[in-house]
Image 1 (cartoon, rainbow, N blue to C red):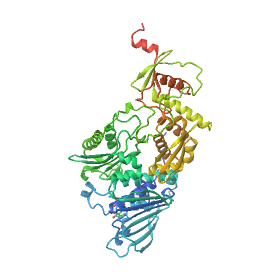
Image 2 (cartoon, rainbow, N blue to C red):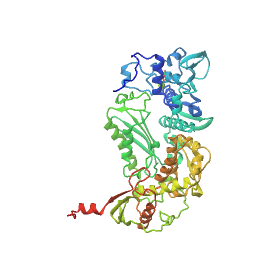
Image 3 (cartoon, helix red, strand yellow):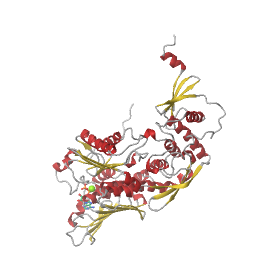
Image 4 (cartoon, rainbow, N blue to C red):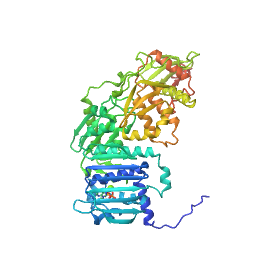
Length: 564
Ligand code: ADP
Ligand code: MG
């Protein structure tokens, strides 16, 4: 018999409960507060915005702008649910031109934190100050200040232990905030942004309207110089921005920024449109850097899908898709492109190529790193599509995925070295300089010691530049910048108190391994198979995918109708 859960009679929830539930939808983590406050500042026409955070945003978030300000008589109203100055009627909802429109942010923030606001409009001689605790005004007075608004949010989620527990480390929350501010800086290059994390300047943009300059601030001047301009004007849409040439790729999608009418969005459609434009130009696991804004009439768009407003729906998806696709394709066509198939394994992609200590005529696999007493059971016959090794075994045919196989080999060795605390380190004669994005830097600060255990020596070198002085020897041949950026990405999603070694080893193995599309010599293939045979689980890569397909002699005979 099914036990009926104990229920209370149906009743309408108290306003206080409703507002806490709703606040939870808008404010998920400290970065959500920053997002809402930034959007308000931008909607208020600010040309200068300073964001300050402390303790990952839980202790303090302060956003100051020089926008219109809020007139004193409207200040209390701004903290009421569904109170907004941005839309007035249903028609307005059909064509939203501002970033905000739901009138939910300020009440939501005030429901989960302590808030102070000081604001002054251009027509006022003195501004106003208000302090709210638990959504209630505890102090209200006149206070002069320059035109604009400053919102200070203290002790976020103090009375929401469940939310607090769900938050990641301070560094992870900082990295989310840094990423978010970076995105708005890209979308609004004419606005001067400044981000101060725990009293240290993390990001600063000039606000002169030059997108390339913002990219330079975030991703470094080398990247900025090489980015290609996108400009595509179609009947419905206008696509503009900057994209990377194929030689300048990244190992994750963190460098894809899409804006629709300058709203930062997560759009699978736009991601697909751009990745398809790069099809055949990037190797497996590589992603472009892109900053793309799509402008289209507001009524062509529904932004009212989710409280956090990061999702949108296009009325004419196909038209948007093809404009973005075409815009990127044409920008790419304007540059000479080298086929990625022609890139030898030892050459990393793009500008990051630095002098190496390993000679180029060395084989990809250092032969005899492991004692190989037995002859390999498999005999290499050849390579298929520069991706699979064809081999013969005592019982039929084997097709081996070269990337997956190498991944397995590296993973086993990295894990063994790590668990025995004997990580083989390769010092770099000439250190590599990397400029991290604000987000990456925040993650790095929390995981430097952990990375050191894996063999990375990374030293600060002013601003967001760092020197890589040593790397794990096992991945010394791969693109170091790509590996470190992938590692930081992996670490960003974890509790830094207990980072998962397995994930790190996987990431190192994946990005250190040879790629599909890489031509291998017979000797290299033989060595790879020999090393694969010595791993604990030669038949699966660390992610669990098969490294090989086996066609048994029996299967072959059956397929060829040789069995009676
Ligand atoms: P929404 O942005 O959806 O209108 P909010 O709760 O975020 O709702 O803000 C409520 C109102 O408060 C806004 O409509 C705006 O009039 C005013 N406001 C909030 N922040 C600012 C700011 N930084 N500068 C000027 N006005 C602001
Ligand atoms: Mg708002």
